[in-house]
Length: 267
Image (tube, rainbow, N blue to C red):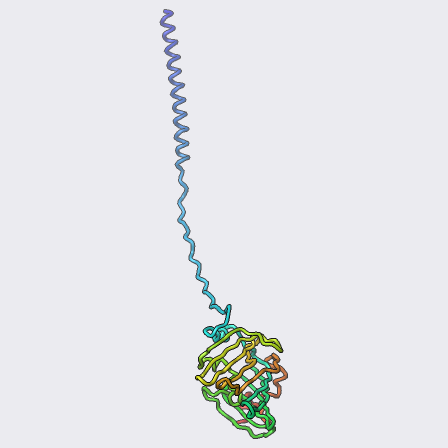
């Protein structure tokens, strides 16, 4: 009988052990599955944003030059130097050579497209007014004046005896043989020097002021002999409506030809 009670007791203990072990295994399995579920959580997918292409910044045209040569001097003068809109400028001009040489002065008042110029020698003063389309010319204090229509290709500077003033026009139709940066002395002027030829005989040389882009000095050589020269002796920058222009663009008879009232008077 005692043996039977021990057998039952041992059986209950064994069954209890199996239940405990099964419970532990089930708990371990549950935790394992929970961990797997947590590890398998997938975040919602997002569409990758591709970088937007940036618009290309246009490359600015090169406008600075380390040096001036005969090949790039026109580009230097056209792109890097800006002439003033309004100014008063004076020159001494020498024409001829040796004993046939004569001297004169040139006074220029420029306001936008308008030009008042006076060229004087020992005998007379020639005055020219122009807006680039029509030119008026008279001498001394004479009230009679000549009216000219400036067709394309007509240079008003040639009418004044200053054919080389618009140097860009000359360079466009000439063969450039030399160019450089130069510093002139007495007074000190930083300039661009250009030498060009229209043919094998005539050589034109220019010194352009870097400060304002205007012609500072020029000459013409015929077979190495100077036959023409011009040199600046005065320069003043002005405003377009400066008082200095108040009586400059007016004809000897008092008409202001470049105003609407003046145009009506001339009809």
